[in-house]
Length: 310
Image 1: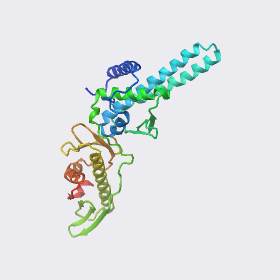
Image 2: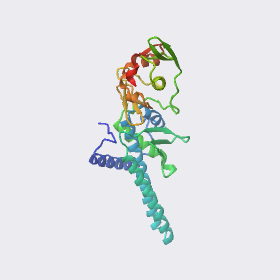
Image 3: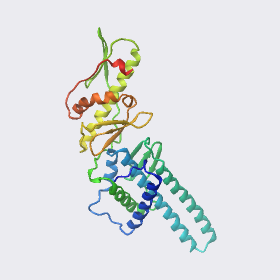
Image 4: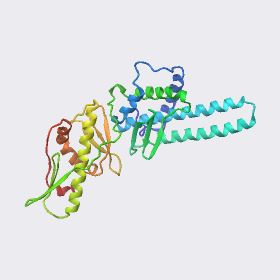
C-alpha cells in the first residue's frame, strides 16, 4: 500500500523511518544502479505529474535519507578524530559534528512537517541534483560527500519505487508553468453585458451593475481556465494520458493552490487557481471545453446567468 506521508500515524512513521535505515544500510553494499532501475533524473522530471501524496512521500524519503547520510558523516568524523591523538582536533571535530547533527535533525523535522496544505515542487538544478521546494523552503538533495551522491540517489529512487509505480511516470515538469492573462472582449447588448475570450469562453450577465467586479471575475476565470488547458496540453504532449472522466479539481489551501488530477493513475498538476477553487461548478461545466482544447478542437464554453458567480 502506498504511504501518504502527511497522513501516517506516529507509529507508522516510526516504521517507515526504521525501514529507511534498514534499506540505507543494505544499499551500502550495492553501489551500482541496475538496468531495471528508473533513472533518477527521469524520476525527478516526472514527479510533478504524481499526486500530492506521492510527492510528499518522495520528499519524506529524500529528506530522511539525507539526514541519515549527514548523521553518519558526523559519526565517522568523531570516530576518526578519536584516533588523531590531538585534543584540539577532537574538540573541533566534536563541535563540527554537533552542527552537522543539528542540520540532520532539522531535515527530519522538515520531513515530518509536510501536510495536506503543503505546496510541493520538485525540479533539478544545473548540476542535475533534485531541488525540493516545500512552501517557502528549498533544499538540494546532495550528499555530504560527492562520492556518495550516486548511492544516495539510487537509495532514494529504489525506496520510493517500492511504494509507487515508477514505470508509469509521466515526464512532465514545466520549468515555467503557463500562466497568461486571457485576452477578453466585451459586448453590451439589450439582454446585458457579455465577455468573450479568443478561445471561446463566454460569460453572459443580466445587467450593468457592479460592472467592474464582473470584468475582474471574467478576466480571472477565463485566465485560469486557459492556464489549465495549456498545462493539460503540455502534460499530454509529454506522453501522459489525460482522461476527461477522471479530470477533477481539489483546492488545497486558502490562497487557491489546487491539484488537477488527470487520470486514474492519480497523475496531477499543481496550479494556483484562486477563483476556480471557489467555483467548482464552473470547472465541471468547463470539462468539454477543456477536452476540446487539449485535443486541438475549437469549442465554446457559455456561462449564462453569470451574476450567480458574484
